[in-house]
Image (tube, rainbow, N blue to C red; front, side, top):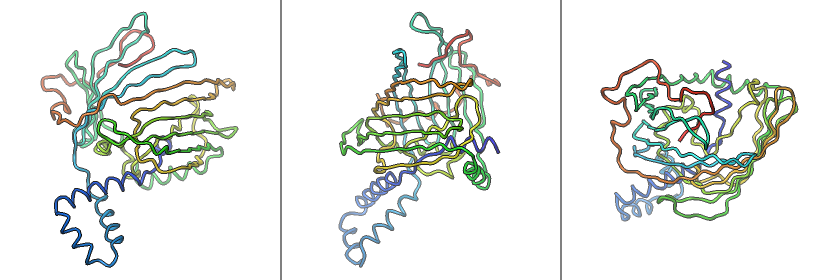
Length: 338
């Protein structure tokens, strides 16, 4: 039950009904084109209440499953820490039907020298509820089952338990829509400015944090094809922003969430080009507080919907199956990723 309680908090998110409406409108446009505008106008002319007809149409269309689409997405990340040290890396995610593939290579070291681990790929098979880790250099792979989600009764009990905690964590999110739009890789991007604050009560095992994000957001409906990998998918709707609710250090979560939000629902849910400045106060085990500020940049550098080879999303033929694939370098040090 503790496991469920922790995961429920980590998956706390905001619904975004606007994306359903936009998606429904796009499907309605497709139906109008297929059947012809003449037929549509005839249908509307014999109806007393046109708005009711359209509302029912939108409702029906949003309940349809999304058509499968391939996606290759590359995102760059840049983080500037309190000392001014800049770290950069990029990641690529490929999606095909209910499966994903993310290549990578970990390393240890800094600018004076790095030692790399093997090239690898993490394959998510949401249809089979499992992940495959592939060591591309040593031609071997391992298979791991995805965690099983709770029953509805267990989920509701875990949510109820969060309301019984003695402490509180108040999260305030203010969204400002600048009304600016532009195309990023052929998709409409919306410019938002977001101010968020995390304010824990005196005894809460959570860090105080304030963030300012300025940037462009787009919709990536292809991500919905991977909902089968989320053990909480049946309890969650589409998301806009994830709320980071990690506890302070290794201390248990002992607080309930009070969420306050203002501003419009965000049409774009995924960061396409953003800059986030974070100011945080972290509690140390001795009771002292460490204060720091950092800046993170995130930008989509490539997006393609070209068809992908289905073989990329399964264990490579001829590779040996082993109980565990190790993807980190074997020497001691700080591990990074490229």
